[in-house]
Image (cartoon, rainbow, N blue to C red; front, top):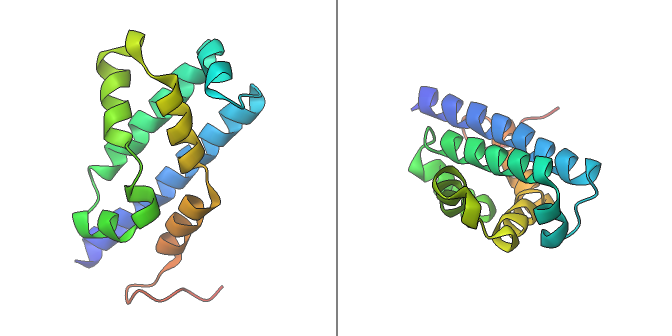
Length: 127
């Protein structure tokens, strides 16, 4: 179980880095709406790839862990990943922008950060 928890924490830490990359992409190109995302070809390719990377990491995590990450788990990563990988021409950028907004929310980042910092007994590690 400890090894699985370690893998989950490693995945969550990588997810946090991908989330930071999404935020950086949006900020760099001044993407503030789904329309501006749709207009920025490089940003839309980048964020859809990052969402795909995040989804792929979740496949290595335990269901129990994902269920405990309630804010993160509500995000429809699988749907966006499927569309981005198999039908790029019909991506709904409203959905992609909404997912980017939810992923980069403080609630999700804090939830993932807290999980990464927990010790094996579920307590916050002291810094």
